[in-house]
Figure 1: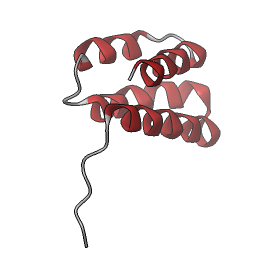
Figure 2: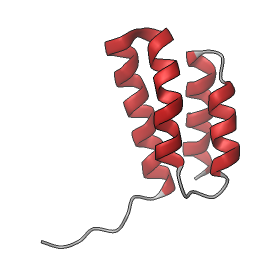
Figure 3: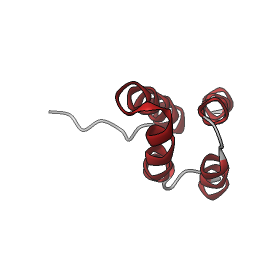
Length: 77
């Protein structure tokens, strides 16, 4: 086996969005949005601007806003 490099910021954001979509399917909007706030902290740990990113995601009042924020992060990375 070969050790792979750690995932890029873009790869982390893509996985975060995929995880969020799965939570929406299995747990519904209310629970998924609240649970994903905790998970988002893990996905963004150590990334440039992660404190600001977590703040934005924690303030997201709806699924649409959360999704827009993450999609913007993917686009900008």
